[in-house]
Length: 341
Ligand code: F6P
Image (cartoon, rainbow, N blue to C red):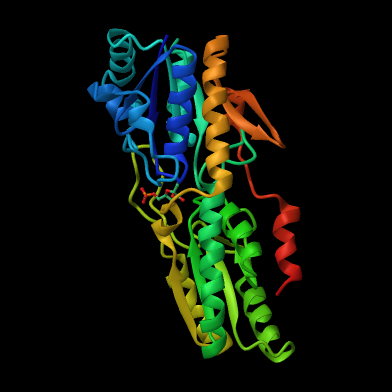
């Protein structure tokens, strides 16, 4: 049995831990593993590296991915899916275990429907996949946000400022909500709960005037939506999967907050720092469990599924179901923010 693995889409801390887990479990089962470089592009180009004990040694704690990544969509290319099927056959790959988010696993779903044997492993700092409670990389991204808010609190307080902190997450407010709760944010603006600027101004004023708190920390998700005007920012730059490149929401909102509250407002964009550094303990263990489970699925001949975490259990969900719905922030969790400003 020969397994092919790849990492596609935006990188996430814990990818290397998953690569290591798949490889070590497969070797223990007497299987072979090859790693395609740069996501689905590596399968199209037959760009791969054999993975053995040495190749995956010393990578558990490293961020990024030893295999490289890309946002290549084979379904955008002439003969893309046919080339993938032919290359997998030529290289003797019996099953694929792609590690990715909705795009990379979306390709896996289509290939699976066309006969390729696939078990998907979910990663994305956005945590926006229905098929798992937590995806690899999310917990580490939240820690980056929490650490950043811890660092921003004293300076915001010293200068009596509003700090507007922009975080990633595309159309999901998980990083903003959980990072904001962990870091004691006074307001969190997310895509799932379109917000009113007037209510935000009122909250900031209330902190100053009623609570005597002369600073505020506001977390804004890059895909945040206004109640009347829709997305705070939009862009014309699309990737191969048709996603707009987001960013800049904080710069759009900061002058409005300053003008309407009268309080000096500064912007901090955490950007790719949220994908950087080594994975948290939670992400290392999650990636390890998911990687091992993927090999177990392959061994058992269960294809067309993604592995995921439900409660404390690792489960398999069909790719159709796991990718078929959104995974919005829990409203109850989001509402907690309102208690702590
Ligand atoms: O999907 C992961 C993610 O980090 C999103 O949160 C963000 O919008 C996007 O990737 C950024 O992608 P890139 O690194 O290609 O700019």
